[in-house]
Amino acid sequence: MDIRIIKTENAPAAKTLFPQAVRAGDTLYVSGQLPIDMKTGLIPTDIREQVRCSMNNISEVLKAAGGSLENAVRMTIYLKDLDTFDSVNEVYASYFKESLPARTTVEVARLPKDALIEIDCIAAL
Image 1 (tube, rainbow, N blue to C red):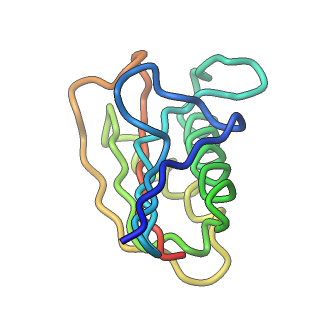
Image 2 (image 1 turned 135 degrees about the horizontal axis):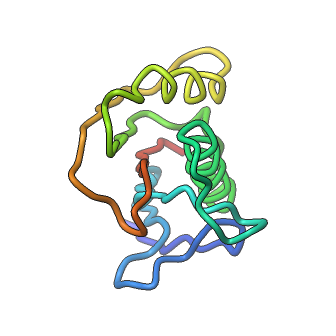
């Protein structure tokens, strides 16, 4: 099986020991994307803006692998506060035209850089 590391400068690069994504055959595993705004390098304070940043970063990683959000089959959303669930869903749904990928949403105690959200993705390319 062909296994390749996917990198793009259009999404945040992890400073730890994991890549932005790994492609194994026709499956792409996108590492959790923090809501870092690539224009400013900062994390917005508003949860809606954080969702947009994380989703945009995932989209850029998928694009670097030759895909798009339409290829997403599974996503996991890690939230600092489940009370933001409705706001997250509102923004999240706007990124998909027809079918939504399978998804799990969990509340966590803390995320890197004190972000309010982190999202990972599995895609079929």
